[in-house]
Image (cartoon, rainbow, N blue to C red; front, side):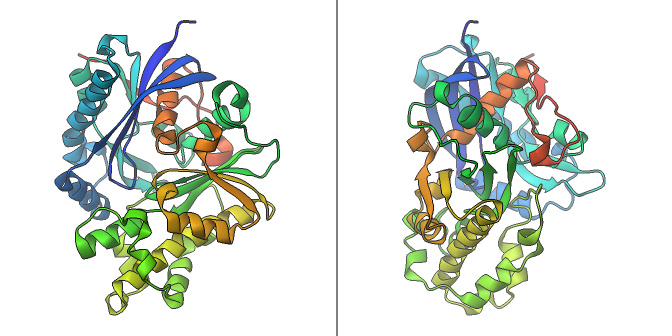
Length: 381
């Protein structure tokens, strides 16, 4: 089979920008990364996305938000810039796979739905490349949560075909190996049969929104501000008492639930606390909700491989190493997959699977009643 080139796009719940990767596929089981590019959202776009996610009561379809059209040219531009950087013409690309920007996720609604913005038709038209989007919908129709989407990819690359795809070491054959993504929302995959994967709760979202509210900056670099504070145990207990953390899996969530409004609801006297103490406590909320989830799934020891922006936060990493002291904790770079790009690579894989009619959901993860092909296809006009 000749190789096929797919672009994977991921703009996650951290709302920092677009990760774009160019991936070559020999098959669904053999891939390699050719080029990567990060496109930062400007302040105005980031604020509009956050506002849409936190004030989304009126949103029932993607078309209800002007961001659906507004974001599409930004995604298309990221694709064109990536290909220019790689020196590869658009005509050589088999497809673009775009997750889209989630602003509302309602898997328990009747009927259930989930909104990812970024019109696939506009992206296809502006790039001249077939575009695959809306990867959650088929799973939701099949009775699932439509999320998380990455465990199927984690299984493919880290379990089924690890020796073929990974340049670094491969995970052990033990049943206590975890892939942990810490984006705006954190999610974990337990690499065992049957596969388990779910959102553990907030990753970076509350940290980013709190420092943005106080200083107008998008994130706490290296956790430096949080490191100046002290953990407030009462605040931490109030936050951890939210029902989501006690729910059994399958489960999924988003920044439309975990955001500053949620934070003030859980602790109305928030502004009476030192702002840096709140930040320090939010770090521990991320650490505790993740470590509690992992310990509930397996023994007290194993391997955890981390990706996403939280992998670059020393305080989060230090907290996880402390709370999971008997686990070996490393970034996915140790497995030969760069931690900053793993999710975007995964969406390129989902696009390839959609193009070849390969099922790519896992019912044990999402709760779907059946395996289905994920994604909707848009042809350039």
